[in-house]
Each structure stands twice: as C-alpha cells, then as structure tokens.
Image 1 (cartoon, rainbow, N blue to C red):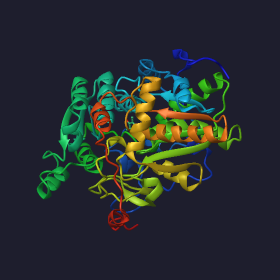
Image 2: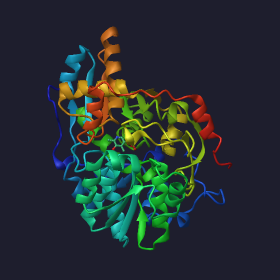
Image 3: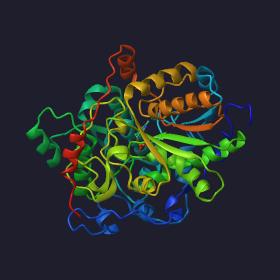
Image 4: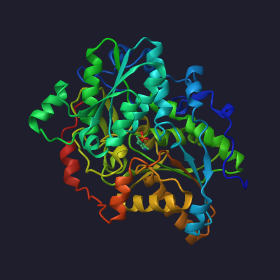
Length: 452
Ligand SMILES: *Cc1c(COP(=O)(O)O)cnc(C)c1O
C-alpha cells in the first residue's frame, strides 16, 4: 500500500461517463405507477415535471452515459474530490484496519448534492426551462440546486421544511446568496400547503409535504420544472462520479476494499460511492461487503416494508416500489435532516431485495460521538448524516482491533457540518436524545399504503 495521504487529484481525472447499474442487473426494478390509473408511468406523464433528457436517463439501460462538457466544466470547480487515508483516526482507535474516506464536503454547497444539481440544471436550461422548483429538508439540496441554477441562469424556488427553516437560518441565507427564493413549508402559496396549515397552523412540515408543494407549482406552469435531490434513477446515476474516482484512487493506494459503508436517506450518496464497486463485484473482480447505515428514527430499510407508496405526503407523485415507512410517517426531529425521508430509492430498494448489500440502523448519540472523534483526529467536522457511516466505520475498526484483521474500510464522507454546529453544541452539552421508535407508529403509517 502507498504511503500517500491523497492521490490523483488532477482535473483530467474527472470521469467522462456516469455509470448506469441498470445495465448490469439480472432484472430491472418494478416501474413507477401513475397515481390515478396505477399503470406504469410513461414519458408523457413525467414531461410536466422533468426535461426529456432526464426522463430518458430514468429508464436508460446503457452501461455508461457521457457527462456533457458543460457539466464537466462546472465539476472542475471541486472535482476530483480527495480520497483520504484516515491515519489519525486509525491511530486513535488502535486498529489494524486501514480506513479511507471519500470527501464530498469540498463542493460549493458542502455536500455531494451538486454532483446531480449541476447536470439537472444543465439539461433543464438546454431544453428552454426558465425556473426550477424543489424542496429541501436541512437545506443541503436547496443550496446545491440554487448554486447550480446560478451557473446556467435559471430561477430557483425552494420549499424548505418549516422546522429547518426556523432552526437553520444560515442554509436559508446560503440559498438566497445563490439567488434562490425560499418558502417555509407548509406554505400558503400552494393548495397542498394551505390544506395542511388549515389543519395545523404550527405544522413543523416534512420532506413529503415540501415535495407536494414544489411538484404542484411545477406541474401548473409551462416554463417551470421540478428537481429532486435523491431517490430517482437519474440522481443516483449522476452521483456515480464519486465511486468512479474512488475506484481509481483506491487502486493508486494499492488497496482493494473489504468493506464499504455509507449513510442512506434517499440513497444517492451511498449509490454514488457503491454502484461502481458493485459493478466490479458483480464481475468478480473484487468482493467487498457493502453496508448501508440509516437512523433508528427513520429506518426504511431495516424496519420498513417493500411496497408501492407515494414519494410525497399528499399523494401527488407516481407510486414507487420501495422500502417505506408509509408516506404519512413523520420521523422524530433528529439532527440528520437529510436522513428523515419515509422511503428509499426504488433502485437501492431493489438491490437490497436482491441481497447485494446489508443495512444497519444507529441512534444519533453514537453517531455524534463518532463525528467528534473524527473532527478531533482528521480535522473535518462531518455533517450529521455521514456520522452514521462513521459510527459504523468506528465500530468495525474496533472489531478489527479485537480480531487483529487488517480490513480495508472505505466510507463516504458526503458533507461537512459547518451549518450543523448547533447540533454539535447540543451533543457537547449532553442534550442529545435517542428516539425509540415504537412499532405501532410504523404500523399506523403503513395502514395508509395505497392499494395497487
Ligand atoms: C442529502 C444528504 C444526505 C441524504 O441523502 P442521500 O440521497 O441518501 O445521500 C446525506 N448526507 C448529506 C451530507 C446530504 O446532504
């Protein structure tokens, strides 16, 4: 193995293609269904929401999809991202494991999300769209899309979950700095928002509600489309630049991974790192164990069911076959806002059903503990979401200390936590809570699954 800490950072190493795992699966995932007819959705059903190029990518089966020059040119601002050997973390754990992390926090908005926000804005602009709408939870997706829209001269309108709008004023500011308009969701501007406000004027909102609002506005305006930051096939496709770079970089270190760990909200950063490695695994060229980590407060893979459900709270989106806790499920207010989604990407859910990876759930106190250890050794303050992957990385490294196994662990550090220092303050003050999730709450939400 190489003594280097970082390798292959020249911009000529930015991948020229995204990797499409649909080309390498024994069977495709079940199709999305129209919420009215319950028939598979066609391109015409999606045209009010997405540009033709992205609708095509949703069902594309080509193994490699070329990255347009107009997208690579913006990727150059922060890609390739570093793959870093976490020597100081290893030392603090006294582990024989070798830990590598792929760091996506150096992007303009501080997470992996611009990897897809940029091509989404690019294709919309090329097809003559004037404005994009979207939702955001903690604000990472909203700020990424706002940045991407500014690159291509698009207007950007964001519905931000009320709880975060109030608790994370700086993410809100960042979106405005990039030129976006930001609404607290539920908002009085939409029918779906008004309906919820009528029932509960103090509603803290949820990602599902905010999606309903953004979709409603895009569907009603001819010059406006909608952008989603996770879950869909084209989003996962764009994120594979992470794994493609990591494969080359890990090889330059002279390493082959034994374990790959990532956190899952809708599944996009996990897919982005893991899919290219899964291609290698399916082809028999390596055999890493792959493990997803989700919050105990929102455990769609480990405690949800695999069923058709809506992507939003109001039932406006197509029905997606996915691991879900029910579209009406509102998770407890953990600090990892990006992991508080009731469902999971249909493609990730399908791979989970095929047994291609494992999943575990963690409470947030253990995760913040790992986040602190990481900050104090490696220096980067991780976002609350990837602390889930770090907690599992730490647990595995400690198991290696017991067994003496020198495992090679690769983890996705998908964002920094500079906007989450309130949460770290709460943890340091001993005020962080773990929420037990009673089975009745899941059962109640699942009673409302749509009939197909
Ligand atoms: C949005 C976000 C997530 C969750 O989304 P995925 O699609 O599961 O990646 C995780 N981490 C960070 C830093 C995020 O911004």
